[in-house]
Image (cartoon, rainbow, N blue to C red; front, side, top):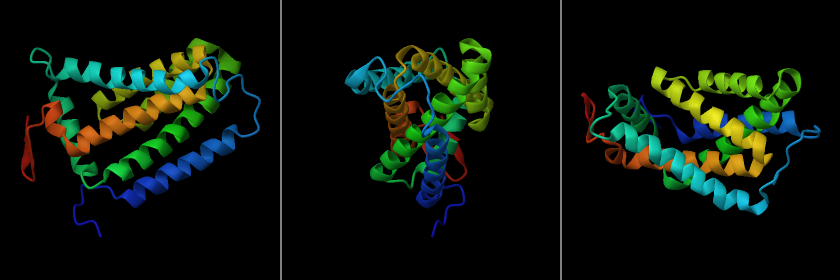
Length: 201
């Protein structure tokens, strides 16, 4: 039983992630899309995806936590997410991240962006699918903006690589890194002390 009302349980996350995965597979299975699992990058998708994921996580975090660019909303968000995820184990984080990476990329890039691109063209498809992605992740304004930007990057990479494996790798590795740091090592992001009455930044 979860005694911390701020904490989300693993079973809740797993149920949501598996549900999303099943829906996304159903929407993409048997459809004749232009993309494929390997696309133009082949097995290079895996190491390339890992490098891109690390870069996409480290660079904005370095800028935001730098002394001359400190966003209070960023630290409030990290504190909130830490309370939600601190009870997850490393294995649970990896499993949730994988399910989310596969499910969300199949849904937003594989199905939604591909469908919109056939109707309204590449640029509009990327913007609209990224906007929907960001709205569904909008816990705060900052989180909305960062997820919108990340989704734009994902959409462009997907268009030019045509590789679902590349996007799944980037998304999964990014989520694994982000969740492990937020859940277990929030002080790496500048949140120095967490407690029930508040957060010291």
